[in-house]
Length: 115
Image 1: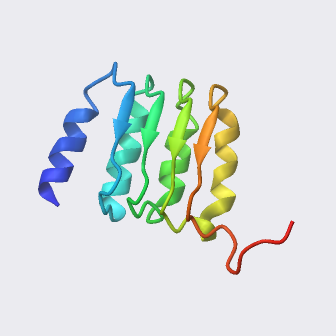
Image 2: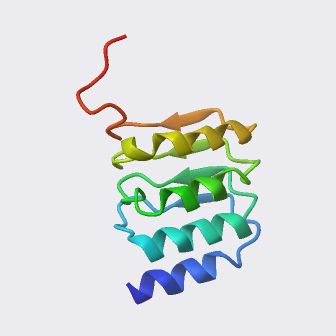
């Protein structure tokens, strides 16, 4: 809601922000766009937790913003239905420092996977 938008706008001004935990917030289209704009402004983020945030709305915007997070080392996308948007995850390859990604319960495969 309005409060979340206010908080995200303030966070965008925190240029030295290194850890951001937004887990459990239920973002919609506008919320995900705001998160993306925070990431575009706060390039020093190294730890980002977006678990359970419904970020599958506007996931393409978020993926583009993540591609510019060159200091990102830890990313948690757990408990989001990002399966239909998995092709946008390729941008994570541009996050050269990324060493830990969590994909718990993200529905990458509709019926599970056989390897």
